[in-house]
Image 1 (tube, one colour):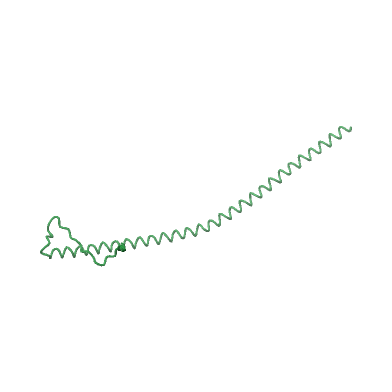
Image 2 (tube, rainbow, N blue to C red):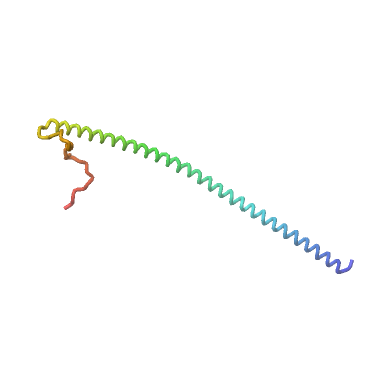
Length: 130
């Protein structure tokens, strides 16, 4: 074998070793990147699980608020029915008083019972300040 052939053989071996080393480095880098991404994915899953626990608490709070709102709505409707009944009772009494009163023509077409003013009204208006 001549010196040129030996040098060529050594160069070829060095090139093959360099290629193998480069391939090994690329493979190792990909493996490292994949491990990093797996770790990142696991962290994201943990964060999502923690968020899911908070979601359950928020859902329970929303259901409780909805139940309270429905109960308040039912109380408001009951109070409105009570007011309507009270108004009807007052109107019946006024009509009865107008029927008995000889100065009121309760049979007139334009007749409308007028409820008396209440002295102890529960107005939320503030009296003017001096």
